[in-house]
Length: 175
Image (cartoon, rainbow, N blue to C red; front, side, top):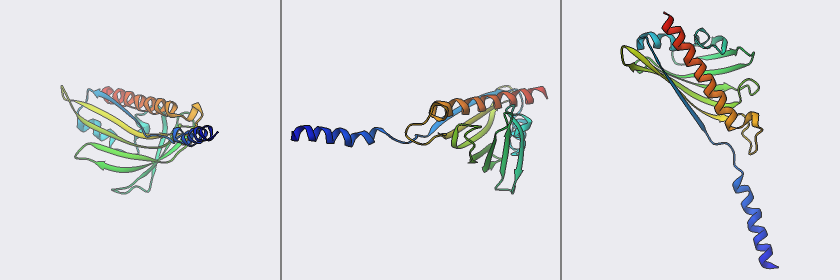
C-alpha cells in the first residue's frame, strides 16, 4: 500500500513539470535586391514608410517620433491593427530594430515580438536584406488553441516577413 501511494505521489508531482509556458520562437528571412544598399536602406530606415512597400500593410502612422524613439500603428489589409515601438535606428550599420507594444491576437497570433531589419552589400552592387524576429505565440498558457500556438505564430511571422521582403524587392527593382 505504501509503495502504491509513493508511485501515485511521484506521478502526480511530475505532471506539472511537463506543462510549461511558451518558449521564444525565431524566424529569419532574407532577400537579395538589385539595388544599392544606400537606396534600400533609405526605404527601410523610414519607420513610417512600411505601407509603401509591404503588401500586407494598408497604412502606417507614426506618433511620438523623436531621434531615438517612435511608435507606429500598422493597419493591416485585413483590417487588424498592431502598434510597434522603434528600439534602434543604426544608420551606419544599416539596421533598424523594433518591437510590438500593443498586440492584436485577432489580427496576428503573436503576443510579443522584437525584430530587426539589416541591409548589407551583395554581389553586383546589390543588397542583402535580412529580417529576423524573436516572438512568443499568441496564447502564452500551457495549452493554447491551434490558432494561437507556436506553429500559428511561426507561420504568421514568416508569411509577414516573406511578403514584406518580396514587396520591398519589387518596389526597389522597379526604380
